[in-house]
Length: 286
Image 1 (cartoon, helix red, strand yellow):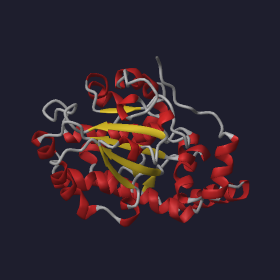
Image 2: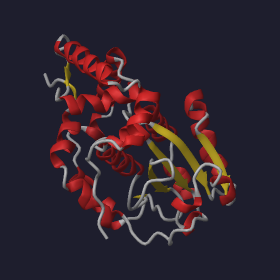
Image 3: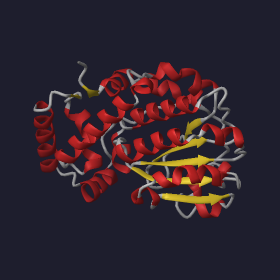
């Protein structure tokens, strides 16, 4: 089995969704790109590729308002500067072992019933922080988002995250420190050019409350409205995600997950030019 990133043009359904939700018309696209190029031209502190398709990555989540996309780019630059020890020139090879050897992060083979990409983070017993640190997990998630934004369909439809806390114990809780939690939430809420539509927390044991109490103070209202807690009740998850698109691991009709990052990591490796563009964007080097 092999994974590939979908680089083709938008489907007709996605085009209609983009026009309805993102103001995506030929006129708005043209205007947004022109205005964003001008804003970047007049701000030498920022260094972003100005190819039209690359700029659309930032314009789509901002509904083609150039000023909003420009502000997003500045927040991305700020975030990358603040965490440059983790993110400076980050490339997939830097976390290759984490992707291939350890089943901490995964993606479903197919999109869900709304055409969204589905990422799974195994934050319970499948994650051994002594082998893959919380910083490494963050870098892996960051790289995965950089790959996902290359897909036009994902730019429009967005993504869904399933946080699987099955078997969570104190060693994982201890690794999820306030600083780790704050960094992840800051990225999601301020500096991610990807439409995060839903976050589903599943199979969480009672000890999860310790994790939730760390995260809760930092969560803004917008994200709070997209967080759903299901425990072991997969019927609750199915109210948001159709079982026809889910594996048996989550009460779905598809076969149990039998693949890991070792299967889909090559799909990222096939697009290193794009990953390099994402890696170096931010503040201009002095």
